[in-house]
Structures are given as C-alpha cells and as structure tokens.
Length: 181
Image (cartoon, helix red, strand yellow):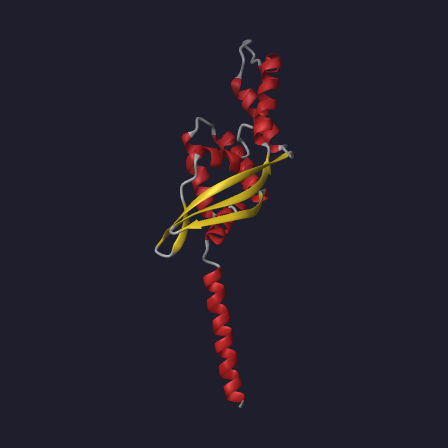
C-alpha cells in the first residue's frame, strides 16, 4: 500500500510540474521575462545599451553617466501586465509601466538652457554645449518624478515559444521614459 501511495504521489507531483511548465509558456510569461531582463540589468540589455551609446557623439564620461541613468531607469521600472490577446501564433500583451519621467526632465533642462544661456558661456564668451550636457545629465541623475505608460507588445509564436517582436521607437521611448506626452 505504501508503494502504491508513493507511486501515486510521484505521478501527482510530475503532473503538477508538467502543468506548471505548460502554464509558464504563454505570451504574458514571455513579456514578464523580457521586462525582468531590463529590471535585472541583464547582460544582453547592458550590451545593447553600450552598443547604442557608442554610436552617440559622447565622450567617455557622458557615456558612463547615460549608462547609469538608463540602468537606474530599467532597474526601478515597475510594471503590471494587464491584458493578453492570443490569435493563433500571434499575440498582444498590454503592460502598464511606471518609469522615471525623463521627458519632463529633458524639457525642463532645455527650457532652462534657453532662458539662461549665460550660465553656459565659456571663457571666450561662446555658448558651451558641453556645460549644458553636464547640467542635463545631472538633472537626469536626480530625476525622481515618474510617469505611467501603457505598452502594447506584439508577440509571435516560433517553435512553440512566444517571442516579442522588435520594439517600435514609441515603445522604446516609453520604456526609457522619454516619450513625448
């Protein structure tokens, strides 16, 4: 009797494990894994950010500060998966994200620059854009205001695995907190 009970319990545990594995294979799960890579500053995300920063006309210090700004953005992002729609091998998932409001900070910094250009004058009397960049980066590093966005992510099922389609510019700017609202 004890052997039968052990066999039944083992089969029950295997059934639960198989069911759990199947349940963690949907579009919502793929989106959660994707966003957690950002939150955890996964190596793939960091490498993509580094590759992007190398294409920008920034000195090493500015690249370092932008890296810090965006890694902070990613790790402090909050998200809630709202709705999943599946249509065969295609799906969409709506996600509410909360990120630092870098759009507002960029706008405020730009407005300050426009109104106070004398603060950014070099010794020759010319506007020094590197001073403005330094100012803007310090403002971004100090940003605490947040903003909520809804992302609708598109997924495609390939080889029985849900994969997120490449993000649009709008989706990326929302993820980065720079979407113009």
